[in-house]
Length: 371
Ligand code: SAH
Ligand code: SF4
Image (cartoon, rainbow, N blue to C red):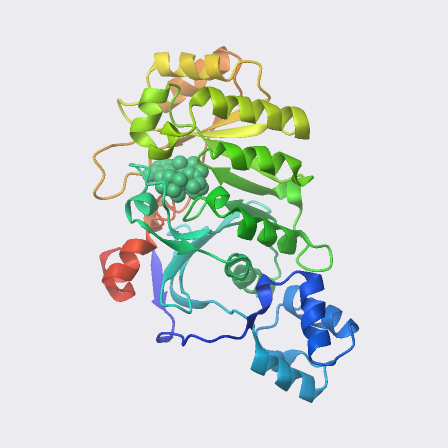
């Protein structure tokens, strides 16, 4: 594992400038008009931000100097400050801890596959859901991220890849936080990231992962978008699921699966179900049979993830043999199932291991020392 520290960013100061990455194209136009500039300036700024990927107003060379100066006074480019970057030993996963202007921290991961570059981004600082196996959930909840703070994570990696002659191909909302409990900002970020005049990421290559916030799934199906939905299932019965996911008490399985069926019928897209296999807890052949029963007739795919145990977790991942048997059982019963590659595990970049709550509590230096 390679690790390095960026120059100490200090604590960025609070300010009240307009957060540029939060804005839709029409809001950007309003901003430009408000300083007495013609509306085409908004297009120019948009291209500088999302095509040229600049990090300062000075670089916007087709804007008059006075306009660059004025914009820098009233608007903020929301560049994220990287505190630490960690590279997995195989070089295929890069995790970055970012400092936010209010001193909070979040983590994002870039995963490099064959001809595929995927960014895993965070939507909240911590998470209010508190799943018992998830380091983020156990670290508590601080606040929602803004759309711009989500977009900024993607821009950071987009710049890095551009310098290497590559580009981001896929996005997964699977970092810290529950995206559907921060719906508006998450959706605003999706709009910005898919805008053809900007980063132009394909909606079909974006996946939003949710613990199963039923009203938000119902809302999502109306968005008229090809964005993929992944639902964290983890258990085939309400009792077991509620013992792992506190919020599951509010949305019982029959409601959740029914919302997923509606989603599939409405969008024509299959749903992915994520299932973390925990040794001796949810990984028996009976559990597999129950999962198959629950998902019967639903256009879906099950992604099996051997648990990424956090240091203070009481549970272990199911053995490789058990994972294979579980997958075989699902397939035998007609459910499409694969096992997720455990990329980035040595840098704690696996699912549920992003734990900035702990990081900010003990300071980044400590955290780097511990890993
Ligand atoms: N809040 C959303 C998205 C972020 S979590 C959700 O829960 O879906 C992304 C995925 O990582 C979820 O499927 C989550 O259940 C899974 N996950 C969390 N902790 C994990 C762990 N320790 N091992 C394996 N998967 C985990
Ligand atoms: Fe939140 Fe998802 Fe972690 Fe559960 S698994 S605590 S919903 S981030």
